[in-house]
Length: 405
Image 1: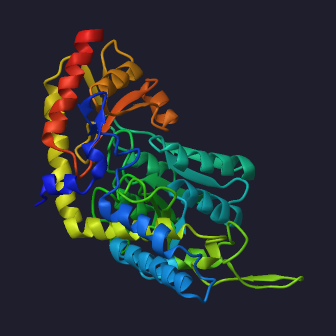
Image 2: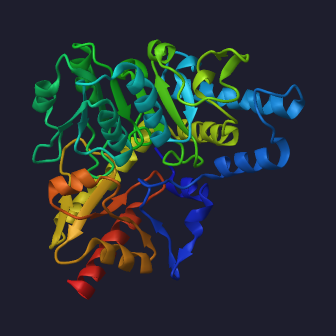
C-alpha cells in the first residue's frame, strides 16, 4: 500500500502555506503538483544537457534525443501500445484532439456526415468537433445522461448509423467523475466500423489504462494532470489511421526531403511532430511515468477511492449540500453546491482557509446548462491527499455555511 507521508515529502509545494494555513490542494483535476523527480529532471536538463533533438551530431543533442525517445518508449509500456509509431507527443490533450479533428476530420468527414459526442465533454473535446461540423456542413449528435450522471447508452445506439464518421467520449468526466463504459461504446462503434477517440485526461492518472484491452482508435492525455510538466501531452493513435491522415502542421523535423517542387514527410510518429519538440516536457513526462509505476496504479486507484468514499459519506451528513454525479463508477471528483451560496463565494472562503478547489463551469458549459446550473465547486483528489484533508474540506464547508447560509 501507499506510504502517504513519504509520498507527500516528494512534493515540495505541499509544505506551502496559504493565508497562514497549511495548503490543502484539492484542484488536481485542473493540474496536479510535481514530485521532486520531475522537478529535478527538468532542472538537470536545463542546467546540464539542454540541446535540440533529432538534429545535432554533438553529445548534448544526441543525449537529449535518446532521453526523448526513451520517454516515448515509456509511454508505450505504460499504456500498452503496440509501438512507438503510435505515440505522438503534443502540447497536451487539447492539442491532440485538435490534431485529430483537423487531420482526420479534413480527410474523412464530408458534408452530411455525423460525429457523436456527449453532453459531459470538456470544451476541448466538444468545440473542435463543433467547429469541424460547421466547417464541413456535418452534424454533431450529442448524447445525454441518465439521472445518476451516466451516459445514455441507448441514445448511442439510436444515433449510430451510416452517416457516423467518429465517436468521441471522455473516459472520465472532469465534472461528475463518472467513469464511462468506453469499452462497451468502442465495441458498439466498431461493429459499425466507426472509429472512437477517448479523452483520457481525467482517467489515465487514476487507473491503469491498456490500449490493447480498450481497442480505441485514438487516446489522449496531458502531462500536467499526470504529475508531469505543463505543455506536453500524448496522442495515441492506431498506426492504420496515422498512416492515412495528412500532417496537422508543417515545418522542421516532420519532413523527409524538401525540394522546390515537392516535400515528402518523415516516418511515424515524427510526421505529426513539426518544429522543435518540447523535449524537456516529454522527458519530464517520462520521469512522472516512472514515479507512478513505482507506486503502482492499482494502489493509487484503491487509495483515491477511499478518499472519495469518505467525501461522499461526509457529504451525505452535510445538510444543504447537493452533490452532482452519483454514479457507482466514479473517479476521485466531488462536485457540489451549497444551498443559497454562490460557487465563487464558496471557493473564495475556502481559499482563505488554505483549501484550493475549483469553481465555475469547469470548461463544460453544455453540461452545466443541461443540469440547470451556472457553475459548481469541485474538489478533485490526488495520490498525495489525505483523509485529514478531506475532513478539512468539510470543516471548511461548514464554516462557509455558517458565514453565508
